[in-house]
Amino acid sequence: MSRTARDLRIGILAMAATAFLWSSSGLFIKIIDWNPFAIAGTRSLIASGVIWVFVRNAKFHFSRTQVLAACANVATMLLFVAANKTTTAANAIVLQYFSPGLTAVLAAMILHEKAHVEQWVAFAVSLLGMIALFHDRLSGGTLLGDAMALLSGVSCSFFYVLMRMQKQGNPLESLLLSHWLTATICAGVSLFMPVPRLTLASAGAVAFLGVMQIGVPALLFSLAIRRVSALSANLIALIEPIFNPLWVFLAVGEAPGPGAIIGGLATVSAVAGASMITAKRTVALPAAVDS
Figure 1: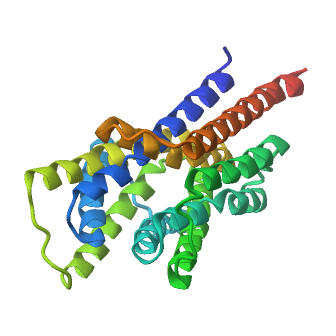
Figure 2 (figure 1 turned 120 degrees about the vertical axis):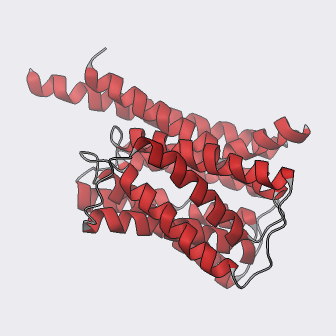
């Protein structure tokens, strides 16, 4: 196996693992009886400790790309938290996951990474899959909440592109900055909200979120974004909501309905198929150039 093929495989698997761990947020957040800013801030503070172990020699040159990537991640996390409080969770998820379309445009303009036909097909099938997954929970929501969900999708697109711009550097530095900033903002907001009640269950759940839902995925995401395109990473992340029913099933034995199964299979199949086709094309390109 060539080095290019090996790097692509590592990148795809790392991004899939990232999406899987990200998906645990819904279940564990429900265990914590805190306001969302206390959860987000504590989670980011713990995650920053995990990341710091791997970037002790971090170089914060505060370049425009490094800072903007951090700000985009902060905006994505906080807007999504706020959207979940002001509209339905299903609306927030579906609206945010329109982001690959914008990522495709931004990546072509800024990174010169053009989208392929299979990626557009995967995007379309994935959206239909998520609508099937959440169709019974989609509602009119609220204008403010839906707007924030859309904005979180926009900031998410910029995040993928800005992180990809650092593929020759260390994207973890932007992630570390983003979690410090998130923890600081949330600490300030939490001063005006009820004091969180610390229990063994809440402490364990928030520790899991900080380490396994945000900290470890940050390391995996950094590994992935240096090996796959911004659009490929964003498309693979579309499988994140598919794993939510799996976590619920493992925790409480609640089996997903037919719509969730159909939507999940459609999304996973589309993303996996597009990833394999794009990987083959990318690996074949150097060989064609060499010949």
